[in-house]
Structure formats: structure tokens, C-alpha cells
Image 1 (spheres, helix red, strand yellow):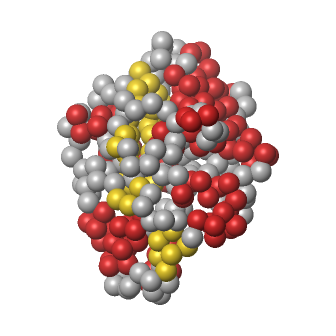
Image 2 (tube, one colour; image 1 turned 120 degrees about the horizontal axis):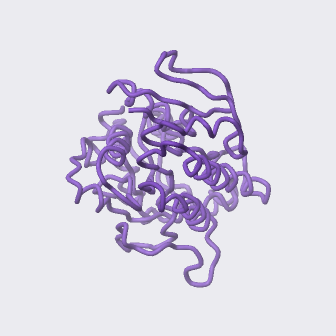
Image 3 (cartoon, rainbow, N blue to C red; image 1 turned 180 degrees about the vertical axis):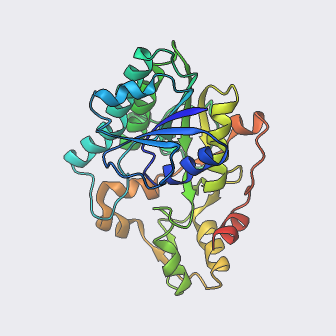
Length: 306
């Protein structure tokens, strides 16, 4: 199989491309940098800015599948959500997806499937409500403005524009667990020193997934006739307090601290929403398709990693 990818040199792509190579697939990767971190002859790197039209779009022709993962990091300690940062977060996802859809429409032959990134932030701040793929989006719920929900909705709408020419899967990803995961890696040294803890009121939900199951679901989305939104989360979400207690137990250290919501607000500004407004999400589509999670329980997943 020939796979065309955007965002493949990012965190998730660094795990996904080797999975394609292991099963004998060929990968064409769009990257702003010309380097090939895989040093594999079955990977072709096209140097380009995927938010802009260009020759790179011709690379979609002949691909069996397109995986669109491009997007600037949502929560970054160096960047608050200023107007310019928000514009960058939107452009890196929505504009890239528009360009990918343009390329799919122009391709001959066209790819059989587009797996396009999204996030469970699509659902907005929903408290204890259990959310599967049938749940509505959170944009504008209660008359408020939810940046992450609006971003995910616009990102998905851009991908949906390809539905009349190919199968479209919307990959609503939860909080990914891996040794180098941006949301997890900074926490582990603190927990190992006994300085880890919960945050906010601790009751908000942490819908997580082990990186191995994320890769497994990506392959499932390509190989099986899934369509529309797919929640990329493990079947057993936990609260932030439960997550902190479990990580502390795996690190064999007590959990004594809590970062109040105000502290997160002072440190991150509006971006603290990504840690305070979480969702209780279940992967109904994956389970109905018969996917068997390698790591369905949080303790099992953290012990595998650490």
C-alpha cells in the first residue's frame, strides 16, 4: 500500500510511519524540513509548507490512503493562546486539510481513504456526560465560546469536503500516552521525585490512549470500512485524580500535591482549558468494529511505558 502523510515528523507520525514500513507499505511524507528521520528507501520526503498549495499536492496521485496529522502543538509552555497563536493553530490544521482535500480531488487515481486528524476537544466541556461518536459538538454550547471545540469542528468540516470523492475518517484523538508524549513526558520526572500531583478539582475526565492502540486504530481506519468520526481513546477513561494516583503508584511515590485551577490559569492563560475542560469519551466505533485494545486499563498502559 502507498500512504501519503502530513504531520508525519510530529509525535504521532514518528510511531505511525514505522508501523506502515513494518508491514511493507510505502510512505510519502510532506515536511517543512527535508530530512528523512527514518533513513528508509520506502519513505519519500517532500519538503513543503502544507498550508500552501504547491507541487507537493501531486504526490497524492496514486496513493491508496492519505493520513492528515498536521497541526501545531496545542499546549506549549512557551506559547500562550494569543490571537496570533490561535491563528497559527487553526491554519496548521484547517488550511492544511483544505490543501489535502484539493490534492485528493485533483488526483488520478484518487486515494481510497482519508484519515484526518481531530481531537476529543470537539465535544467541548461536558462534565460527567459519557460521549461516543454520536454526541454533538461543543462549539457554542450554552452560548459560550470554546476555542478547542470550534477548532476541531472547523478541522473536521474541512476534511468532510472530501466525502463525495473518497471515504473519510475523522480521528478524534484523546490524550496519548507514550514515553515522549508531550502531555505525559514532563510529568513523569516530577512523579518519580515524589513531586507529582493532580490539578484543578481532580474530577475532570482524562480520556487517554496508549500509543500502540492509537497506531492500531489508525491501521484499522485504513484497512476497514470505517467512516466518519472515530474516538481514539481507551474504553476506560479516568478522572485526573485517578490518573495521578495511578501514575504515582507506578512510579512508587506518594501523590501529595495539587495544582489549583488558578495556578494553571496563571501559568498557561486560556490554554489551561486544554487541561481543565476535559471529556469522558468512549470508543464506540472501534469496539463495534471488533478492535481489541492492547491496553484497555490505565495501570497496564503506564506499567508498559514506565
